[in-house]
Image (cartoon, rainbow over all chains, first blue to last red; front, top):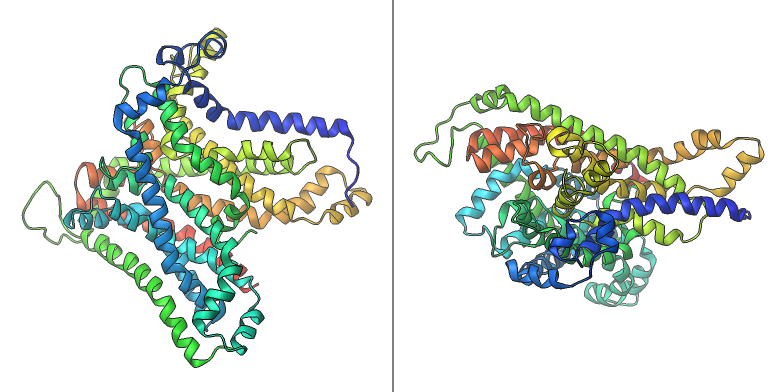
Length: 277
Length: 290
C-alpha cells in the first residue's frame, strides 16, 4: 500500500529534483538555443542571447554548406544500423542455441564472449590500423562497420541471451511434440515471442554504435567519417563557429536522444550484462 | 530435452560468433604482443629486429608514462567518486514521490546519449571558454577573474565533462536497483522507529550494494579508455597534464609512428584492464547461476 504523501513534500521533491534535472539538461538546452542564433549573437552574454537577439535557422544551412553534413549523417546511419544488423544475424543463432540447448560449457562460452568486451581498444589499435592500411580499409564504411559489429557483438549476444532465457522452454517443447521442425520452431514460435527483446537490443546497439568515438576517430578521416568524426573537426576553431557547432551538435544527438529515451529500461540490462535488471 | 542432433546444430549455430570473436581477439592481440618486442617505426623503412624488452624499458622510463599513469588514476578515480556519490543522491531523490517524475528523469538521463566529441566541444567552448563561455561570463559579471579552465585546471575540467556524461548512467542503474526494493520492508522499519538515516544506511544502501559495485566496475572499464573527450579539448596538454594511458599510446603509435613502443603500451593497458575485468566477470558470473 502506498501511503498518501503530503502535497507540500511532493512539491518540495519536485522543486529539488527539477532544479537538478534542469542543470543536467542545461548544456543540451543551451546548444539548442544557440543553434537558432546568428554567429554574432551566439557569443553575446547569456541574457542578451536569450532576450535581445533574433531567432534564425541559418546555422543549420551553414553546417551543410561548410562540410556536407548530410553525407556524414548518412555515414552514421549506415555504419550504426549496418553493424547492428550484421551483429544480429550472427548473434541470434548463437544466443538461441545457448539459451535453449545449454551444454556444460555454455556458461564458460558466455563469460569468454563477455571478456572480449573488456579488451581496451587501444591495446589492439596498432594491429587493426596496420591491417586496415594494408587491405585498403582505412576510411571506408565497410571497415568501420565491421569493427563496430565486433566490439558490440558480445553485448548483442548477451542481451538476446537474457531475453531468450525468459521465454518458457515448455512452449518450444510443445511445438516440437506437435512435429514442428527446428526451422518452423524458430520462425513461428520463437520469433514472435522474441521480437520485443530483439527490438530493444537493436535500439541499444544503434545508440552505442552511433556514439562510438574511439574507432571512428582512428579509422576514418573524410569519406567514411560518421558524425563523431565530423563534430571533432570543429575542434580547430575558425572564426565564429558557436552557432554552427550548436546546430551540428543538435542534429548529431537528436535522433539518439529520442531513441535513448524510449530504451531507458533496456539500457540498464544491456549495459550491465544482466547483472542489474 | 536436448537431443544429440539438436546439440550438433546448436554447436553449429554458435560457431560463427565464436570464430569471429576468437579471431578478433587472438589475431590483433598476438600482433600487439609480437610488435612489442620489435624495433619497428613506420617512418624508418627497413628491417624490424627483435629487441626483447627494450620497448617496455623505453615505455616505462619515459617520464610521460608515470604522468600518464597518475593522470589515468586521477581521471578514473575522480569521475568514479563524483558519479557514484552523485548517482546515489540522484537515485534517492528521483525515487521519492513528485510531480512530473518522467520528465525530470528524462532530463537527468539525457547527457548519457550525447556523443563524446559533442560534449567535449560544447563544454570547452560554450561553458569553459574564459571569454565567451557561460562560466567566464558569470565570473566577469560578478567581478571575478574568469578561470582559464583548460590552462589552469585541465584535469579537473576533463573530470567535470566526463562526470556529466556518466552521472546519468550511474543514476539510471542505481535507480533501477532502488525501485526493486520492497516498499513494505521500508514501512516496517519505519514503524519500528527507524529514522531516515537508519533506513538508508541499513536497508537501502545494502540493497544497492551490488548495483553500486557493477556501476563502479563497468565505468572503470570505459573510463580507462577515455579518448575522444581529451582529443577534442586539450590534446593531452598542456604538456602532458591530461594525457592518460590511452592517449599516450595513441600519441606514440599513430602520431610518432612507433609501433614497437605503442604496442608495449598496449600490452600494459590490456593487463590493467584485465585486473578490473576479473572482478567484474566474477560478479556477473555469480548472477548467471542464479
